[in-house]
Length: 279
Image (cartoon, rainbow, N blue to C red; front, side):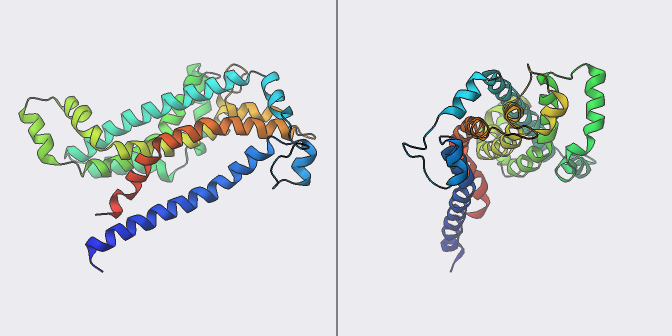
């Protein structure tokens, strides 16, 4: 089979693999949503069954909306996630553009240094991060979470975007410079629109760990005014008794924004993942 014929086959295979993976990954989400509309006894007696008129119950959602400031938790998570993604994409794209466009001594070492965060988990430095936030007076603020998540997402963003930016035509950028465009204009007007699939890929892979994270909100912002959705859901989990209706309802509500953003970015995400497979 020639390369021209094999490329669509590889692309179709990747699309099928992504669909299969999505179905497998969505099954726990489906169970969570289904059980959030059932009574406590039905959750344990028939967790795989759909709600029926006799088992249907909204007690979990009523508990979530009546106890605690769950709307505020959503707002905190949304602010932290959106601002962190925006900063990761901005600074990551700028660093990737500099590494891919300009040749200087230590270019490779700089790229390797910036990519070390992929191999070294940021949670290993939790104690030092907490000490730094205490010294800066940023404990129990959303700013501390935004700074940590931005630093956490930059290595992967730089690693992915730098590879995509190397594929942008040099002739296009040279033509822009001949027309008198500044480097900032070339970056924002010529390069960024061409790497939009890669930006969407980075946004999705950055968004999910931030939205679902429990570790840093528990360490850096455990106050009532700065709790995130994931941390707020823990109020229904006790040492001896757990309100499973409320927990499942809280998790179901927390899933919705991620699902909406995933659907928005899905086309660009698949295009970014499969772009290297159809050449």
